[in-house]
View: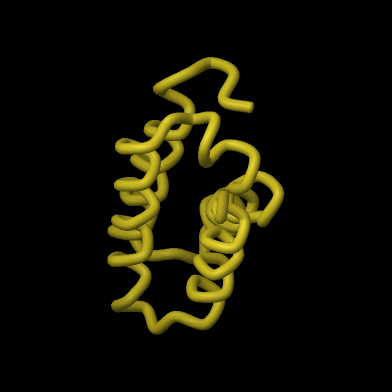
Length: 86
């Protein structure tokens, strides 16, 4: 119901976060994906641009090693539960 607002807030937090806070935000995103059904977070995550933001960090290679591993775990959790999350 409020998925879009939640993911918009996470996008805002990730773009403004201090490097040490990114770890907690990525952990929260992973927890949402692990506990929620893909139908609840798939479309809002795509519409908010959160997935694109996380993937861009990997593609641009501007994130640290720990952040890369957390982002890769996020993508694995994102793609793992259902082949068609939308």
